[in-house]
Length: 390
Image (cartoon, helix red, strand yellow):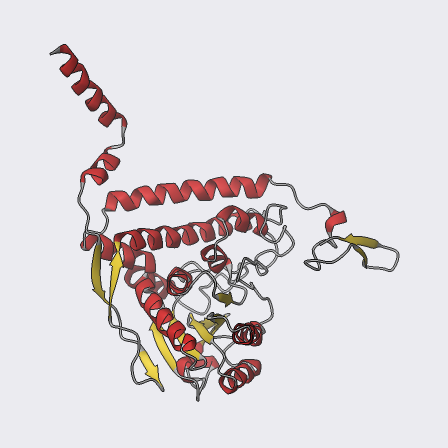
């Protein structure tokens, strides 16, 4: 009898040591998956588009939630570090647009390729780099993903080509990556992103033309967050139907605030390219909560009420959370636990990003080429020399 009472006591004391929420989550039976209706895409030169219903598994839902929360918290931490003058230079944040980077990654393969403009932190994370490497790059430290030499606009990972600082210039490069995919006979596609502000660039239309002529596996993606810097799309473009801008290239307009809608549209577009049908154009209707960059307060050309309305009605993290809780894919307590874990991860990464040493001056010329013998690089004048090591 004593042995039995001791065993019961041990079980009860073990349960008491665990947080109540963890015990509750562990004992609850969740659904494995659920089917959701998603917004129908507007189509251009397409007879049918992505499905209007999709299945979300519990595992995928939790992963998307964690990824979007991580991007959100990472961007808010970058904002804080910038205001503390620990991050310097250009810095463009993507909070509000998390469904774009997470949904796109969910719709392609790790072997596929992606290139974007300078609002690149979220894509750098979803392409596989850690928060620690990203924040350390923002603070210019040796542990950054570009060794502290690229900063906010120039981050790279495997099959991720930046982070490009010149407006619209990444689009012809993306067409070139797609040409390499086709030339090498690989079943791969390239996602080539640009914003509504860059959409009027002439080089983008040249890239459209070549991609269509050569039937390149290129998905041109316009992230339409309504404002090019401080100029609304209505003031900047005679036609705001960006998904029709390809003219002879098929296009679709997607709800960029819904991670499931973005995922299904990306899968559809990737299948189109892999089938040898040539390029396709996607317009993601999204929204950024911060200003264009850190020097832009973001409220001189739009009202605080407009921002708050988007936050309250269309926030991508809130939409996914509501879906999962209402369909028994997760509980509020479980998602709160993820929030706590994400906050800790961000804090730990920020500690590293502020404590890690900066690269020494003598390494200024390193890593110009990926595989070359050492050589000398001239500095600001002909008497200053730096050694370059791959």
